[in-house]
Image (cartoon, rainbow, N blue to C red; front, side, top):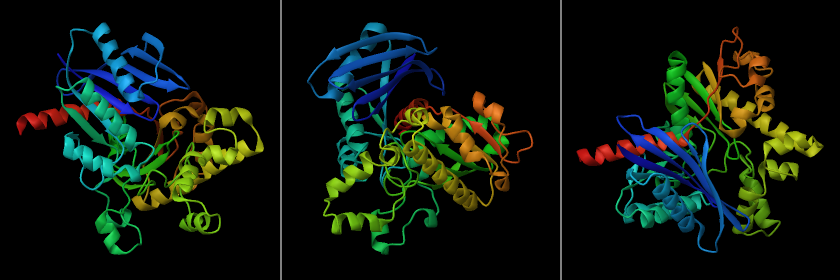
Length: 395
């Protein structure tokens, strides 16, 4: 059996998973994370059943991504010495105008992805660092880039543009949308669970430290709350979400802030963290119960409800809502706050089912069905990696 490994590289972590490839559907064998916490580094691996099989910490001053990939490689060689890895699949947040499908990485691809760093400064540099480290660790296997923007690239023009001079649109200043790997996976799962609803009008809310919403019709993205960058739309853990561009002009002209200072504020000091003055973590905010924490949650919920109404209008109605992501899957209070009073939209919540975290949290009387579907970006990356390999062989 051949195997593929998936890598999702962030600034201080690399999530990875190992899949066996026997037929069309990759089978998960192990899921892990290598991360940097303060000055310490650690790796933790679970098997396909969720049991921890490897856990170890270490100290190092070497570049994190190279160091972490070597630890992942060492784990694989010790735990599964006889397996044959045929490709590595990478989550890449931004594919720009050029890439709307998984792509085998070469120098030309890397150079183009590097040019997109200003559009996704929190993610793209680390995605690229993960690819480069993997090329060093596994020089003889293909590296496949799988893009979060690809799922949204068929948006109609009105959901793809800004009201700016047309030449900017032609140059690529447009609404790209993100979290596409998550939306694609969840849409596929919904088609398995409730095919009639999946074929209709669906809004998926990917709520976590990064948060966005997507309108999907017949399995295809038609609108997203995120736009040119991953700053737009909903407030997030540390990101501002939707913002009057005049605020940025004010910060520059009246406050004398530089572009770098504004970027630091909007990406790292805003969102739930900025509003609460406490934390970006929803669990901490719910436990704190301070006025500021409550207001941060209220604003988060308000923006979700506002976006839900707007996306339902884009779809000209609504058949299903899906919650996914860390907050979407686990924060029952947030789901309840979002859905209460939504009878005008056809939603009636089953509070007992919602608090228990059932797969369906709408009542039997609800015209719009509401689901909780855990996302799995690693599985989506593995599928894309296998498909890309098959296309390469055919070509």
